Image (tube, rainbow, N blue to C red; front, side, top):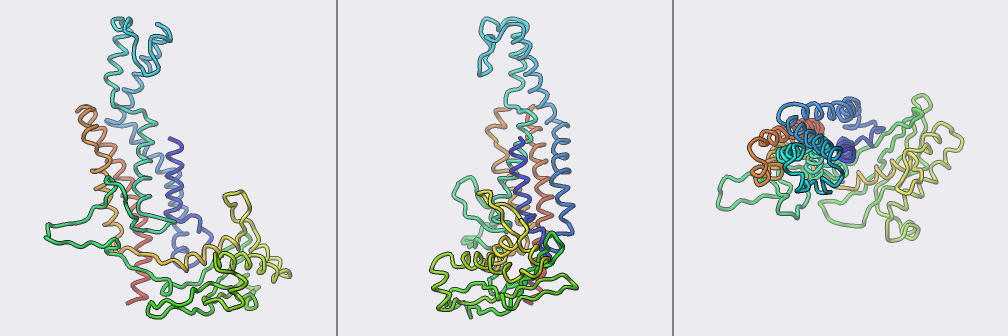
Length: 382
């Protein structure tokens, strides 16, 4: 159960982009105001709500059946010996007519198709993880390709003879060239670092030309002592012939970032505050090596501004429909429900209602963020 909760918690932190908490511009500034509330909900309110729901109604009865079975099992083992029950839970035939044996068999029959509290809690986290991980990648909403017959989309269809449905239906396509933004982040020592786009040589009318890259203009760096702000200008353009030789034909942006990671602090040797802001450790990589704030944000900035993405026009409506479809198609298993019997049916529906309630709350939070992005885009566009 702990692994299921931890995995889902990590997914939520990715969906709400907690790794970008030190950014201080645009939608990230708005998200920072809600970050504490969301984090408290993820760490405290969510586990508490699940635990509380599992202790009431039919789900509590399911767990009690499991607990009664375990108690009966212990009594058999203590009185009749270890050989009375095998590794699969089967009672030795010679003890079947004993009072303890009969009590154990009755408890086992009643607990058939039930789950422990740990298993039920893990099921909730696993279903929520499975559902939301299908629609997000690196914190951005995306219509992922499905390869399983089971993992389908719920497409609204009213019986038309021919119905065409695009994968990116009801979404705005945000092209990189239309989304260039300045990028601001705060270092642990309170210094504000501003990546400012100085010039951008973009493709015109989607005509593909030479590949373009973000290159820092280190000679143009400025430091404002009063506001403690370091501004690093960037250009977005094709490489010069000399730069092509220097950076080669592969992973050019990574090599540009690597060079800037070393060259930028060298230009700031006389400025202790700015130097500390850039070189402080932000995280460690997969190999355990420290990654500075400058290296981390160079990667974030260049990746974000060179990747096209989508904004959904009605994320809440879309995910709500998809959640309903997921619950009916993948959580409500009719074969297992029939095998479990009528006395366990209410527990299944209570579990579905719990997953739906939590899922809809997460959808509401995600929709607020998406709607804010949509508002900014529509205001800019129209």
